[in-house]
Amino acid sequence: MPLRTLLIALVLVTATGCTTVKGWLSDDKAKALAPAPLVDIEGAISPKASWTVDLGDNQSKLGLRQRPAMDGDRLFVSNDSGRVLAINATTGDTIWDSEVVKTGKQGSRLFFWRRTATEAGLTGGPGVGAGLVVVGGRNGEVVALDTETGAERWKTTVTSEVISTPLVDGGLVVVRSGDGRVFGLDAADGTRKWVFDRGLPSLGVRGNGSPVAGGELVYLGYDDGAVIALRMADGLRAWEQMIAQPDGRNELERLADVDGEIQVGLSELYATSFRGQTMAISLSSARPVWTRDVGGYGGLGMNADKLVLADINGTVWALDRAGGSALWKQEALARRWLTTPAVQGNYAVVGDVEGYLHWLSLDDGKLVGRVRADRSPVLATPQVTPAGTLVVLTSDGELSAYPQP
Image (cartoon, rainbow, N blue to C red; front, side):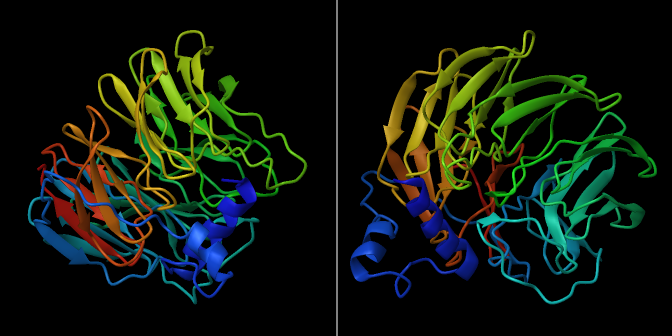
């Protein structure tokens, strides 16, 4: 699918909250861009929600992928109404509910965006660790709450909107702002310990890759197609590797964002780019181990021997972690704008723009189960609790839990 056509479809989906492009384009073009019809599944499993919580929040205009955070038997979720909630992962009961920032009128946001100042509200999903749950806001707010009580521990401000998940690790909170800066904050009081500054292209996909910890380094994907490793101690760059080159005649063609989940194994780091490349990078040498011409706007799911991803056309791929070869692909979910896959037992699970969740066998990629979580899109990557329960948050604030089938 041409990049321009892909972006038109994604803008229509994320900017309007609709699940079809009818009325925006001619009938023939709308049909060509509409999600593929659902196919019958033989011998299907029957996932059922054990609980559902309505967060009373409409995030469909944001075009963001705010996923829940997990800590033991608790889930932490934030919303654009300025609230953070702690929820029992087994029962769905609310443990505490804190108002973090007071919000103003919301404006709709597109799938791709030019960086501008906006109204107050929480835009970054929560990060959790060391007894803290940390969230970021539209105006650069960073707020740390106590995981047990929801009481505010500290609050600070960075230079731009925070739309990625903060990382809490080793006495440090690493926060990425929308202007390309990365801040290392003291987890005890929020004071600034270091700043890493990197320029960004003027146009990018609506999202920022969240920081990921790996030993003494923190890894980040960037809008120009690079993965950068920073030293936790002082924020200095340890190495940089290009996943995809941002070449093309205009800004749209040069989009190469590494926005989705980066996976860190024992000896390799794995990342994928909007331009359609996936790479394994040696953690010891920072050199590519293998590259595959498959990738997408989301991130990677991982188990012991496979990586799972959804490409820009809606094809789900399983790649061999050791060499990058394709083990299988599933093409039945075309144009359904899939989330990053989550791994639940022997299944890969993806959400789509019509609110469906799809279970695929990790052995061969066959579709084995389906359920509709909501009628609004699933943008956030589904999360799997230590007990094996899949937790999904829709763009209209429906939070649901699905035990392992």
